Length: 140
Image (cartoon, rainbow, N blue to C red; front, side, top):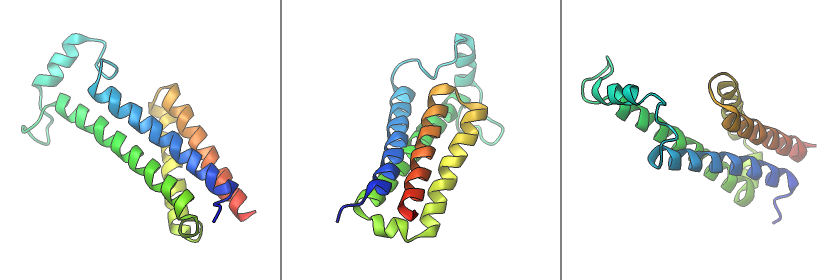
């Protein structure tokens, strides 16, 4: 069964999030993209532990936060892309799944506008527009 244009738009939005998450994971472990510009700050982050536990350092926490953020975005992209194209009836008949996807993307846009730089913010906004357009088209 052909999933239809609405499903393809949702999948495209999910694909944007998957690409952003994949690039974020790559940059977390390759190259200096997420290193502080101040080398002394990186050294301090590698030495200092957070208040919650002495079992880690701020640097290890920073890396793990970035990696898990990436994995979450990748999971969203894979699951919603799959649902949109391979299980579109399941996705579009579940108001719960549609709401969770919409809230996740709206959260990315809100966080992006406040805390991120332009590329992930714009990518998240594009993903949200594609997602909501796909959902609206499916129910039009």
